[in-house]
Amino acid sequence: MAEIDITRMSSKGQVVIPSEMRAGFEEGEKIVIIKANDQIIMKRAADFDKNLEDDLKFAKSTEKAWKEYEKGKFKSMSVEEFLAELERA
Image (cartoon, rainbow, N blue to C red; front, side):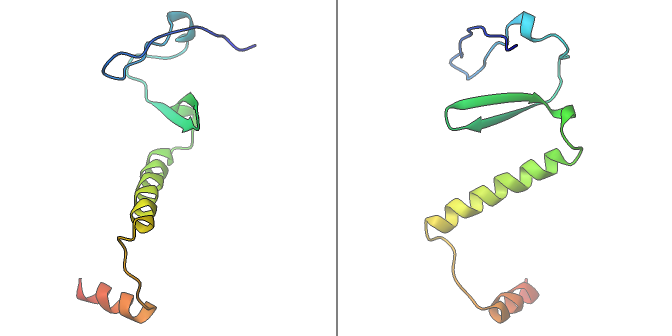
């Protein structure tokens, strides 16, 4: 059964997890935060695959690149032009 409690967010964006819900978590433990629409999910990072941190970095950079693309900040080029530019770098 789900546990429910109420907490508040500070002006710095900090949220206190009620003490009875912290059982099994240790100070300094990494926690993954997932936002899906108006829901926030918190999960112990150790419960994920060991490559999670790299996967999250990749996902963030991909999302950032996609937003830049949607703003029209990328240029189009052929495969040949792209490869030539890579060689020049």
